[in-house]
Length: 211
Image 1 (cartoon, rainbow, N blue to C red):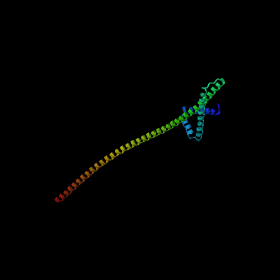
Image 2 (image 1 turned 90 degrees about the vertical axis):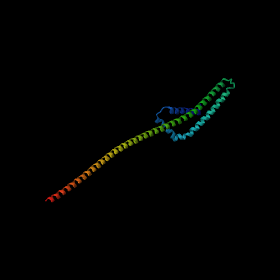
Image 3 (image 1 turned 180 degrees about the vertical axis):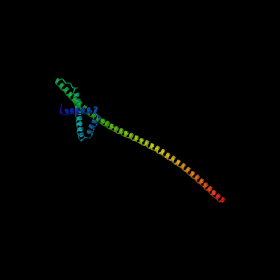
Image 4 (image 1 turned 45 degrees about the vertical axis):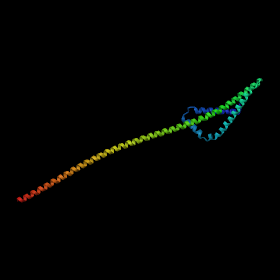
């Protein structure tokens, strides 16, 4: 295996490991921390161009391997009488097919890995939004309960003040009744006093006449 195909194989192994890391059920905190680091890392952002050129090179190797494979298959149509030539032909066909499958599967797995990464990031973002919505709903429920408690307390205070007002009105009515009774008694007392004074005056005048 030549050096560049060995590097493609290493890239394939790295992709497999990354895919396994993405699909394994790690704790959400760990996965969120790793993905957040990957999405915000300057090193990863700077390596995006190198990764794109790498996959372009893999694509070129895939096209070259596919072209060589088809060329070898076309050579099979010609008769090969020499055993050594036939063995060399099959070996060449095997290596070309191996290289084509290696580069093709690397490209295919890169697409799957990229899509899986996007889906996992979207899933984590949706879970974060769900947590925020749950917290907002909980806070709104608490606020609603607090307003209900305040309304209940104010209703009780209004009822207590209404009762106090009724009692004050009742006391005022009782006071007015007592005031009327006192005025009536004062009028009656004044009337009796006037009658008594008139009787005294009549008695004194009669005593003067008899004397």
